[in-house]
Length: 232
Image (tube, rainbow, N blue to C red; front, side):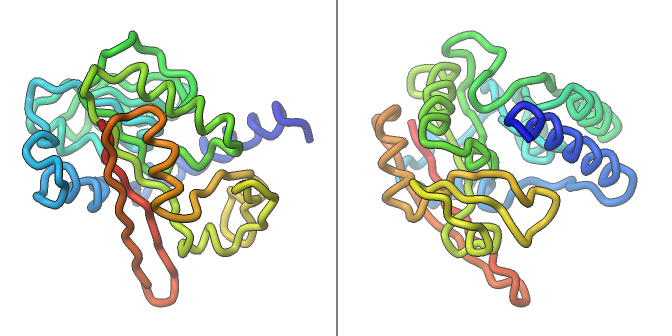
C-alpha cells in the first residue's frame, strides 16, 4: 500500500469512527489539562493567557468540537479543521444541536485554510504526532505560527513517553514509531517527543517563549501520558 492509499484508508477509518461515536456516546466535554492551562493559574504567563470574548480560536483536528465549547461559551469566534468534509459536517451539526455555532472546515496540521495572523489562540490537542516525520512536524509548527497573530498563543497536547500508544509502538528510528496493539490506528506512523525538553526544542524555533509540562495517569492499568505546552 502506497502513502496515498494509506491516507485514504485512514480517512475512511476516521469517518467510520466518528459516525459510530456520534450515534451513541461521542466526546462532549473539553480536555481537562487544556482548561487548567488556559483558564487556571498554573502558567507563568498569568493573565496574558486568559481567553476573552474578543478572541478568534482555531482547533486543529477538532474532532467533535468538544474543545471549542468553553470558548464558544464565553462568546469567542471559533473555528475548527478536520481531515474530511464528512467529519466537518457532522461536527457542525452536533455543535448546532447543542446550541453552538463554529465554522468547521477541511484542513490539516500543515495546510490551514486561513490568512496569516488570523487567530489569537490555536489548539492542537492530540494531533501533531500524526505528522510522522521531523520534516512534517517542522512544517506543521511553521503553519501554526503563520496563522497566529503576533503574540498569539499555541496550546499543544501530545502523547508522552509513558502513554500506552507510545510504549506499545514499534520504534522506526529518529523518533518515528509505528502504532501497534492499540486500535484502528495500528500501522500508522507517528512522531513522538521523548521528553519535555525535546518538545521545547522544536517550539523555540518558532516561538519566543514556551512552557512545557507533563501529565501522567494510571487509569486502572491503562497508562495515559501527555506532554503539554503553551507558547507565544
